[in-house]
Image (cartoon, rainbow, N blue to C red; front, side):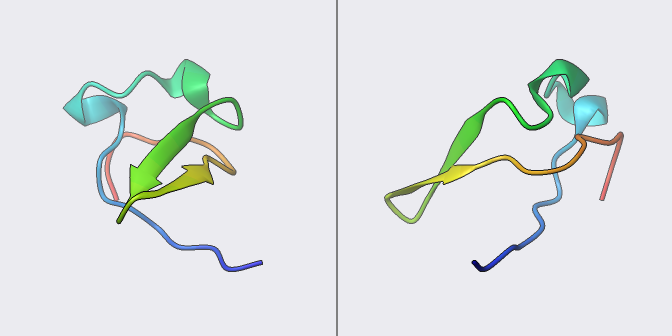
Length: 41
């Protein structure tokens, strides 16, 4: 499994409640959110 980081956080409007519960689309691939959503990267 590869894991990366992205810079948006709840300071940018992403709710912290999506930690470990959501997915993001990266270059056409749906990737799960793992770990906590924090204020900023």
